[in-house]
Amino acid sequence: MNGDHAEAVIDYARYYGGIEAPKTAQMIAITPELMKLEVDEKLIEIKFDHTLTDSEDAHQTLIAMLKTIPKSSC
Image (cartoon, rainbow, N blue to C red; front, side, top):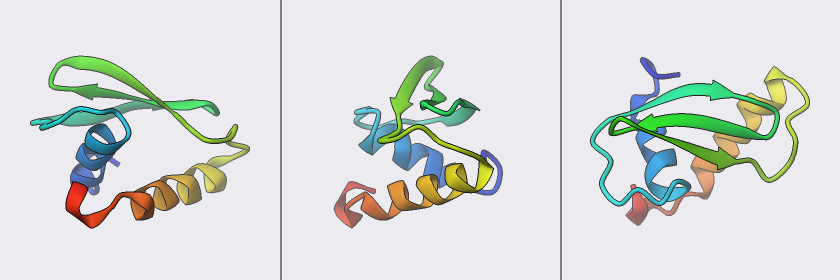
């Protein structure tokens, strides 16, 4: 996720994490309830809208979250 989708992780931090202008962001972990990001050397947690059931659910949820971000927020 971090290498191939670095810009997506920045978008999660900005839109869902409320970080106004993140410079760096890495996804540290995903649990069924949330994703943990390290953003500009700080750890943040972003809760999902439901409990993830498996890796496919995680994948689809992350995609849906990206699609929800307004273009002007990216």
